[in-house]
Image 1 (spheres, rainbow, N blue to C red):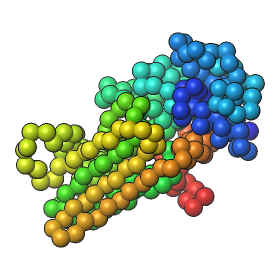
Image 2: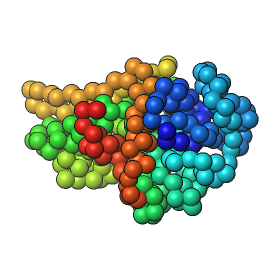
Image 3: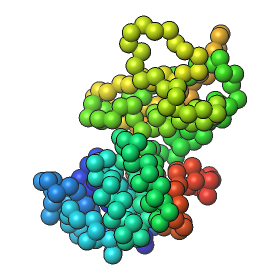
Amino acid sequence: MIRAALVGATGRMGQEIIRAAIHSTDIAISAAVASAQSTQLGRDAGEVAATAPLEVSIGSDLAAVLDGADVVIDFSHPLATEATLAACRQAKKPLLLGTTGHGPALTHQLERAAREIALLVAPNTSLGATVLLQLARAAAAALPRDFDAEILESHHRLKKDAPSGTALALGAAVAQGRGGQLTDIAVMNRKGGAARRAGEIGFAVVRGGDLIGEHTLLFAGDGEELTLTHRASDRGIFARGALRAAVWLTLQPPGRYGMGDVLLAAPGC
C-alpha cells in the first residue's frame, strides 16, 4: 500500500481525496497537512472529511511527516507551493501538485524541482479533462487558422483564480497546436469594444453557486463551429484521478510530468 501525505487536507479537494482513498486498494493517506491557522489541527482527517476515522491527525508541518510517506499530494493554496516544493526536494519525495493560480515566478522553481524529484503538475486530474486537452491540441492543429478559438469556464462561487488552471491549459494546448504561445494571443477581457484580432484566444469566466466545473472550447468558423466540452458532475472524479496519478508517480524517475503521461502509460485503464 502506497502512503500519501496530503497537503490541503481540510479543503474541498482534500476531503474528496480522503474519501476516495478509503476505498482504494493501492494508496492510503498516511499524513494530513493543513495551514498553521487551520481550526481543524489535531482532529482526525477522516472525521473532518465526514467519513470513517483514519487515525491520522491533521498537522501543519509537512517536513515532519515525510519520512512515513511515499508520495505527496498537494491541493492546498498557491502561497504554500514554494514550501511544499522545498520540503519534497529536501526529502526526495515525488509530488503531485494540483494547486492552481500560480504566478509565472514559480516556473523556474518547478523546473529545478523536476531535476531532483518526480513532479506531476496537474491543473485538472480528471481523466476526461486530460483527454479534452489532447483533443484541443489536435483540433487546433487540424483546423484552418481562420477558425476563432474561445474558451468558457464555469466554477463555484468560492473559486478564486480566474480563468481556471484548466482553462489556461486549454488555451495553451490550442496555442501549441497552432505553433504559438498563449501569452502572445490570450484575451482575458473583451471590455472596450475592440474588434477581435485574428488568431487570438478569448476567455470567459462564470462564478456562481456550487458549480463543480465545466470547460468549453469553441472553434467558430464561417458557417460552422466545433465545440469540445468537459462537464464535471461529481468532484470525486478529480480525487480518483489524483490518486491514480500519485500511484503512477511513485514509479517514475525525477522529471516533469502531466496527466497525459499517466494516461499514456496505461491507456484504457
